[in-house]
Every structure is written in structure tokens, then in C-alpha cells.
Image (cartoon, rainbow, N blue to C red; front, side, top):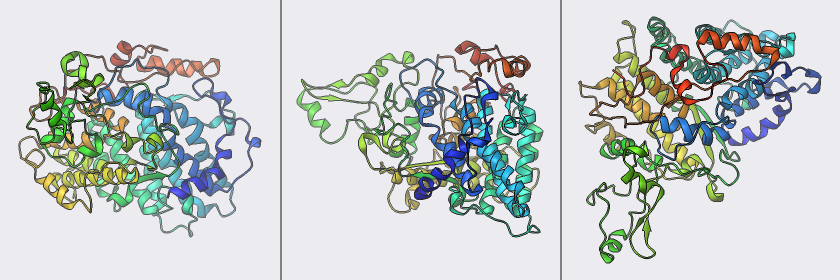
Length: 563
């Protein structure tokens, strides 16, 4: 796959740059001159959009994911930085680098004399645009969709902003139509993308599974806003003969040997280093989670550190248990103001002697995210939609009684166990590709089996739903947006839990981002969307962003206040 990414992107790059300009400024500047681009093979157009769904995140990793969302979900703790205009690159990327090629594929397919053979090629384009469209609306609410990209074809430079209920309905319809086209065997023999489809190589069954998992992703987002529709979608997926993603082999996987999300040097510490929180570290250690060394680095309490402590007659700070067998893994407060004594060791080493200093708090496993760190030779792998995510939605909805008597092909506990197993295996595979620290060698069956039997993990009949939630949360460690959406919609981890408690966090947390005035061409539609949603136009301050919610988030609990 890594070779095909590099091989096919160059064929589609030119076609993707169809008169692009920032759509947050003026939609009229986008895609207005098709004559600028030669007409490439329609098969190669897909590769660029697929690649950009992953690789546009170069700046997002630093400015948004690690600096903001991963702190808010308490996956990491680090210096609190203000939210800047560098966030929300997901929005412009959608209209500049993902949608144009997908629209062009459908246009060219419809112009073919044998267009009936291109129905499946067209179908997958809708699945891709729904995939990223969900992420765009997650932090923006209403967005242009039904009239987007029409400037190129119909001189429509002022697209309306579709409200979230309409977006969700449209996406569900498009996914259903795509599934129908991909499974309709009465069609003429279908032409495929071949290896230029870097996700699935035109395996139509896997595309159907992805479409069904995206339906589950939508259902989860609708749970608080329209619970009946959430249940209906879940039941539709259960009835589908193909069903959702059913194993690690049908996940959306992206592997690229040349892509470096933190630049050529892999500088993941740009602005600051990120560390484990006390809450996540405590749970990973007490449950003996195989993902612990995958997610976080060891501190300096390794090797002969005890000899140094004895030599200089120094004792460790009180928050560290000298008898802890996992003493090399320590977390710090999610909010430094809540425990400044421990937080001091996040930014300062522990002094032992004249030249001996130990870093006590565990940093994130930097090579796991940045395989090119310090000119290392690992490869970047990303899994934007996982089998684990599918399994945890299944377990969650079954546990809540949403199946309505339909065959769920397993109990909530069985789906839960499959989700945990897949999360561990997938993250271990990412670590192997990155030449980073792994959680196990071999097939991991022993480690995973022991973890599933751990009393802190195994279903106990008391807090089963919370256990599903926490494993779902842990599985989203590398998917900052999905982790944020999860914590925002469920209120978990919750502050009052005796199982896995969210830490006190005194900062206000924005529940959305912002879209600035796009200019005269589309100001009217933008203004109408801001007014309809109750958003203060152009507001970028955290108090406003934390109080004004997108539609499907309005009935969700506050962070840490799940039921």
C-alpha cells in the first residue's frame, strides 16, 4: 500500500488543484476554471482525495489534536496554549482537497459511453465525502454541502449552509444509495479503481462495511438529539446482509513510507512536549494494559536509578511508590493548577546529584505518532476508521437495549471483547510500522487474553456500560476528534466515578470551533447559519465557544458529567 500511495498521488495532484483558494474567504474562487487541468484517468482521481483525508492533518496534529482536543479529553497533559486560527483545517481541506476530485469522478463517469459500468466507482465517492463531512460538522455545525463545489459546474458561488439534521439525513441517504449500488448484482460488469484505491483496492464488500460503520458513527452522534433515529439506524445496520466493518482486514488503513506528519525532522515536541495524565496512567497500570508502552514512554526511573538514589541519600517524591513494579510509568495532573507540586515535575527534572537528573513524568510515545523523529526510519500508519470503533458502538447500543430484538450476532460482552482485542492489535501494528515500542511480540494472544480476564476489564454485571465507555475512550487515543466527540456526547470519563474518574479541569472547554465571515459573495448564507444556530458571528473566545453548541450536542452532558 505504501508504494501505491506515492505512485498514484502524482497522477491526481494536478486534477485536485482546480483553481483552489480558501473557501472560508470566498466560495466563488473555488474551481472556476476547469480548462486549467488536463483530463486524467478517472481512476487516479480517487487517490488524491483518500490521501488528503489523512495527510492534511500535518498541522492539525500539533495545533489542534495534541494542543487542544487531547488535553480536553485528558489523554495528555501539557502546557495550556490558547486556541489559534491554526485549528479547524478540516474545513478548508474538505472543499479544497477532498470534494473536488470526488465530484469530478462522478462527472466524468456520467460522461462515459459505458457509464453503467461506473456505478460502483461513483458510489465510493459518496462514502468518502461522508467520512470527512462528519468530521467537519463535528466542530462547525451547519456547513455547505448540498450546494458545495457547484461553482465549478453551475456557477453557484454562494452555497447555503445545510443544518445538521439535513446533513445527517442526506449522508444517511447517500450511504444507503452507495450500499445499494455496491451490492446490486443486476448491473453490468463494473469497472474498478484497482490499486489506485489505496484503502480497499476496489474490494466493494469492504466499502459496504465502511458505509455501515459510518452509519453507526452517525447514530452515535444523533443519540442525544434524536434517540429514536439513533436506534433505527442501528437496527438498519444489524439487518444489512453485509454489516459494518467485521475485522482488522476491513478497517480503513493508510500506510505511507514518506509522509511525516510533524515535518521532515519529526519534531513532535514543537511548542511543548506532551505527557500522560494521572488518570489514564493509573488505569492503564492497574489493568496491566498492553497498550501502556505503546501509548507512553518510560521515564528515567530505569536501570540503576536506585543506586543513584542511595549514593546521594535522596528519596523519590511522595507521589511515587518506590515499590511500584511499573515505576517507570508516571502521569501528571491534567490541569496543572490542581496539583502544582506534581506538575512541577512535568517541566522540571528531579535533581539527584550534581549532574544526575531524572525526568519522572512519562511523555507520550513520540515515535508512535512521529516515526521520522530525529531522522528515524519508521513508517507512518493511520487507521481513520477502526474495527474497534465498530465493536464498541455495537456493544454500547446492545447494552442500552437499542437492538429491538434484532439479531446482534453476539452479546454486548462479546462485542466489547472483540473491540478491546482489535484496539490492542491495531495499535501494536501501528507501533511496529513506526519502529516504536510495542505492547507484545508474536500474535499477542496471551497478553490480550490476560487483559480480558483482568478484574478491572472483565464485565462484572455492575458497571458494564461504563466499562464499554472507558475501553471505547482508550481505543480513540490516536483519533483525537473521535475521542473528543465521545467525551462530549457521553460525559465520560465522569468526575464522580470510582472506576475511572475524569480529573478536575478548571479550564473552559470549547465545544465547537468557528467559521469566519466568508466575504460578500456568501455572507448572507453564512450570517443566516450563524443566526439559526445561535452562534455569535466571528467569535473566537473560549467562553463563547464553550457555551454555544452545535445542534446534535445541545442535549449532551457537560464534560465529566455523564449518567
